[in-house]
Image 1 (cartoon, rainbow, N blue to C red):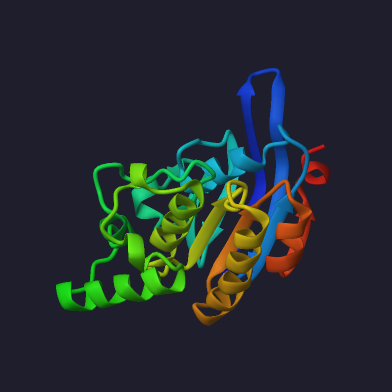
Image 2: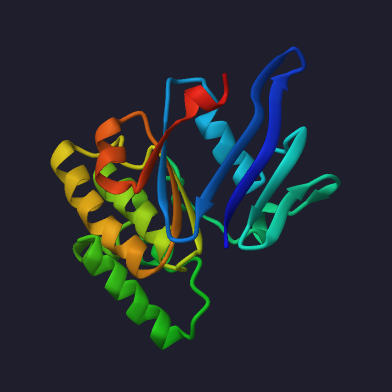
Amino acid sequence: MSLNIHQLHFRYKSNQPLIENLSIKIEQGQVVALTGVSGCGKSTLIQLLLGTLKPLKGLISFNGVNFVQDNLFLSPQARGIGVVFQDYALFPHLTVRQNIGFGLTSKQQSKQSEIDQWLKVFSLSEVAFSFPHQLSGGQMQRVAIARALAPKPSLLLMDEPFSNLDSGLAERIRQDLKPLFKQLNMTVLLVTHHREDANHIADKIIDFSSLTQ
């Protein structure tokens, strides 16, 4: 069981292929970092995996379920993927607690207990009832990561998740995340410009620029 990307093609302009004949395989429970220069297609690949962009052709499958193949295109909401963006993407009208609990489907008492656990893991208990506009950038990013992890998705995509954190906080969160990923047997694709992030958290590092040339 794995994430399988096979002979994937995508372009924004008809005469300028951005991703051409891309094939990557990520085993279940593996943390893989994609590095490479800006504009090489790393964040575009995240959008293709999520289903917010549609490839010209190719196969995307995860754990035996085809997301994209020939005339098949599975909708984003049916893919069950967790995602963390660089720009947080929090719900501004929801508190920290409500943001973290947004994707949880457990019964109310269990749900509140789970939220409490994630608040503790990411040192957010003191701002649990605050709204995003009341938080620092580092706090918002921690909420975004906690919200993505709370439903325990089998596949997690992270697009520059540490770029808005100071070096000390980024290091602590990296150290906290890796054992969590292993405990949850979560398959993770991390897109980053920062080699330090990749070195600390990934089982495998792929230079995406070399795959798309």
